[in-house]
Length: 97
Image 1 (cartoon, one colour):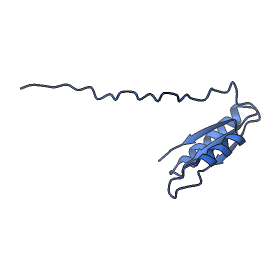
Image 2 (cartoon, helix red, strand yellow):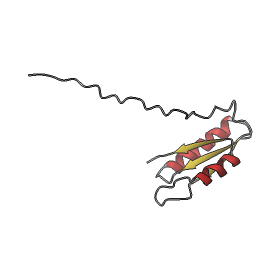
Image 3 (cartoon, one colour):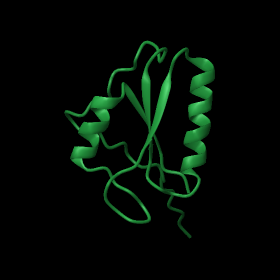
Image 4 (tube, one colour):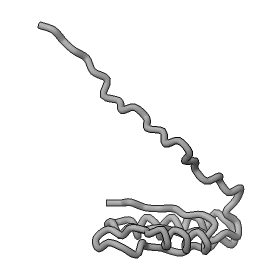
C-alpha cells in the first residue's frame, strides 16, 4: 500500500500593477463610505461599524452606499465607484451572509 500526501494550501495569486490604497493617517473629521451589496446581515454589520467609528474618531461621518445594478446582490458600476470616491475619503465594504 502506498500513501500520497498532498499540500491543500493554495498558492497566492499576485496581480501585477494592482496596489492597495494607502492608509489614511486618521479618520478624524473624515467621511467614510459603508458599501453594502445587499447580502443579509451586511447592513447590520455596517451600522455597527459606523457606531464604532463615531465613538473612536472625532467628527467622522458615514454614508451607506449600494451598487446600482443587480437584484438580490448589488454591484457597483464604474460610475458608482467614481461617484463614491468623490464623496468619501475611505470605503469599508461588507459581503455578509
